[in-house]
Image 1 (cartoon, rainbow, N blue to C red):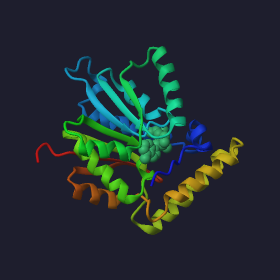
Image 2 (image 1 turned 120 degrees about the horizontal axis):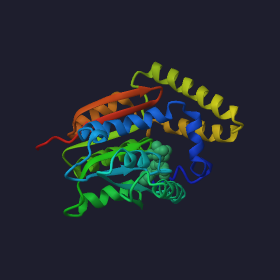
Image 3 (image 1 turned 90 degrees about the horizontal axis):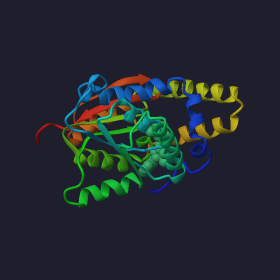
Length: 256
Ligand SMILES: C[S@@+](CC[C@H](N)C(=O)[O-])C[C@H]1O[C@@H](n2cnc3c(N)ncnc32)[C@H](O)[C@@H]1O
């Protein structure tokens, strides 16, 4: 299914979405913290013999990309997104940060559907290998059967021992808790966006979130741990949880 879910108002004004989520920044920081920890604390390193290559799935407006690039000089990010309106905002944002000297030119953004990207990865010999694959608020947009192929693709492109970190909207396998949390999250979004006079955006975002809850698409925490483990990842765990947001990490085994 090639549905583009960010081509409308939500995509054009995506930067306002963070007003709806007071935990937005700590959520993004947790993803970057996982990368930092995996690579042996870049923040405190003045020299690293090899640049780490990170694949980012879902560039959006470049919020996550910029955080990763700000972390260290010793990283290169290949980022993919299928929505030109989002990529244009990311390029503008990263260009500005670059010209203020806060990041280097160590990134490449490609406009491509992640499903096509991993199809190519599965058929092309000697496809690029990554030290880490990172994604924020993106994979929940896919249907479950497509997501499974993406997880397999991620395992395929990771180097042995490589890290997959997914900061995403994770529902709860406990159904009662799932619905109670969805209601709390919906109230939070409505209150925060209506307060700044953006009822229109609140309606878009709440509708988007209800669509995410469709039985073909909904991403659940315990199911994901089981699925990633079954596919062949190890050390799969959730390291951050707040309302519907969660950061899940998984590693490709060193051997096998
Ligand atoms: C909610 S944004 C998040 C972006 C950024 N990581 C952040 O946290 O701000 C999700 C992005 O994933 C992209 N996306 C969704 N489905 C995709 C797909 N099948 N292939 C490539 N990109 C996709 C959307 O276009 C959108 O820019």
